Image (cartoon, rainbow over all chains, first blue to last red; front, side, top):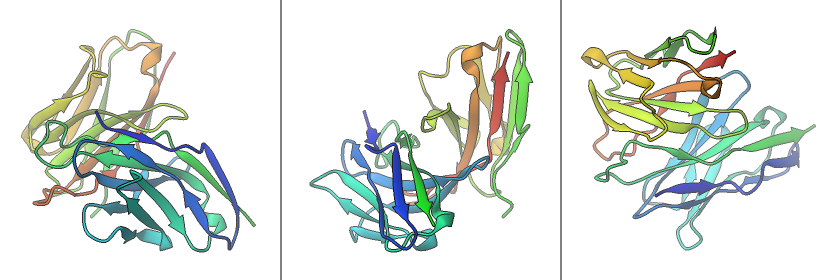
Length: 117
Length: 116
């Protein structure tokens, strides 16, 4: 069974400072990994994904994430945080094609990011 | 591309009543997914369709839940004999057919169900 852990319920950072939101995963085979962001009263918005290739993937709004296979991690990062980045962030994993749960995203419990002015 | 739409956005119902939600995916997306999200938790997978075929159902989807996607376009999720534990946000997502199977899912705004 696949699973995702986001060890921090909340992350607080000052505007202009770098931010990291942590994610670790467990899945059989090579994972497909995703980050989504959720603003109040809005649906989840896709930020970025890792399928294969370069371990550092870049996504929307200046976010990037680093895939580390040995540590089974996929941490979300941004070099300089903005107040508008404050939201709820979800990491998700999906098994590779061919398995019975091919279409299923498994999400972490979410991390609330607060960026202070 | 108008995005995934869901109706209604909010539903309040009394315990024991039946409710039905609708999801319209992004046009040309052949995969459609339903998730449930409760407060403070990440979304939990319920079921997914490829075209009109329902390919997987979660154990969370009890016999009171049924989902359909006639003609491979919009989908409905029906909950019969609602219980207070069904109160949650129901999210729909769609994704395009992707040869590499890495297509991200695009989510709608959700339907918030409150069972009183």
